[in-house]
Amino acid sequence: MEGHTVLEMISYQYDISGLTGSDLDPFFEGWPKKPEPIKRMEILKNSDYVIIARDGANIIGFINAITDKTLSAYIPLLEVIPEYRNQGIGTELVKRMLEQLKDYYMIDLCCDEQLEGFYKKFGMSKVTGMIIRNYNRI
Image (cartoon, rainbow, N blue to C red; front, side, top):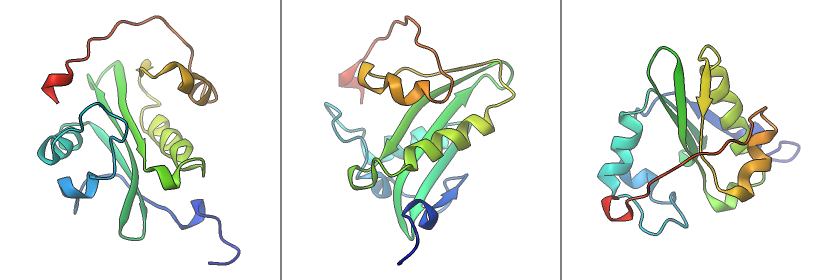
């Protein structure tokens, strides 16, 4: 559409109604092993908050959060398919999620070093953390 940016044509959904595991096939790019379709859906079903970005019928991005429903929230995943990156969709998903989580005392996430600058623009600070990755459990 002439005169419209990609971001203006994107819609956002705050639940997973109508989604299937195969809708999430384009995601988890670059992972050593992608989660199976059933696990992809379980990730979103078991999240306290989910926001899905759509371009028409196509799912092009998502973000999720898990919480203790009291004090703490954790954002484990932000995914945007490669052809939609660098167009503001990830930024919009994070903004919308932070709005959903605004009443929590702490909002944490872990990211690769090259993504620190992206998250700093939302007021997030770098901290030291520890992780375990069981790649055989995906």
